[in-house]
Image 1 (cartoon, protein in one colour):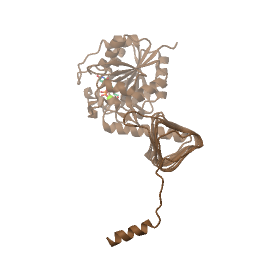
Image 2: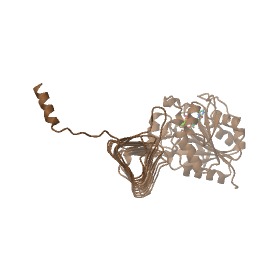
Image 3: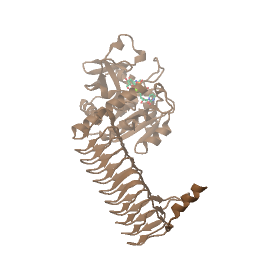
Image 4: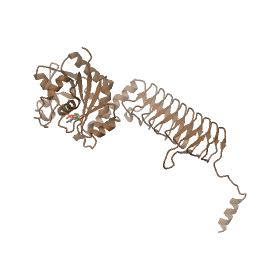
Length: 461
Ligand code: UD1
Ligand code: MG
């Protein structure tokens, strides 16, 4: 069969009443990622040509959170999953090729599963295929009447008779349908059911009764089909995805000391022989090189860490960290920071929008903001770059092999040359030339015998 266009359509317009939330359901996060984004990125990784996310309730906040990497369509009034697809087609026009319809609240479906399902559908040359999970207890899901590998019809929980409720085949809410036939099927939907909604599920019965039998793609791993409708299921989905992700990393050669207490997002990459200590959260597009130890109690969001690093009891966000870097305890590396190889960042140090070149050190109690620090430069304890005058931010530039004495205040904009030394306790307001010494502090005066005289005066008083 020649390859034809595949559109992934994600239904994410529902309010999610059972979540009891102001947030639209599909924006709730599983392992740190909104459910709709997990589904969308899995579909993209599976190779669909285009992803369309159908939004409605809280649509603006969903689009804002998910960004412009996807196409969106609107369902302004939520009249059911069938109506949702009708709205998508009304906005986008009829869709060519295969439409893969997925619910935005089934966050565990993997890329592999999407690929397998699509292949089975394409090979079957049917008009429609349905993803089915065989469950010991399918309560809550639509029940699928399956007969010799074909899906005959779907009955929703609220419409099911006591006998139908015994059916263990659950509708995973996922369909592959040929676009032209989908438009026809949607025209036949009616809302004469317990919820007075236009159910997408009814297309299965329509196709079957009009002589186009529907392929039932029955899963041997039903946990991944889980639909999240309330906060309890949200926590369950989180636990399942967390375990799947941690298991994958461990089998790839990463040591996770306490997997139950380690939170790794689905898009994180970790190279072999790295160790993840307990209480660690690796979020977003974080990548960790080889042989690095992260944690305990560390949170990295969209951070790239090189090889042989040690990052413990610290936070970092949107930063790039080289190899052989040591960070912590209690460091805060803020966005747009770049730390070269061999950099050392110690306790209570904050780095913000700054570039520390290879071998630079800031070991204690320091704020470095809007700065460039040359290689092998040492920043003494308590150094502060004063980058903000209450109105604008200014830069501090320090060359290589420089030495900034403890408790120095560098008032930006200011430049300190290569090899310069700033005396401890200085307030630096003027540029310092290379290899110069800068003394920006009050001159000390010692008064002979003054302390003894002072005690005498005070003691007699
Ligand atoms: C649906 C299926 C059910 C299946 C289950 C799988 C129907 C009628 N029922 O039930 O057979 O077992 O999913 O998880 O399809 N949505 C819209 N617009 C709407 C209504 C819903 O976009 O008007 C979206 C929701 O945001 C959600 C998805 O469609 O992402 C499913 O809706 P939900 O209300 O959760 O349906 P279920 O009751 O779970
Ligand atoms: Mg649901």
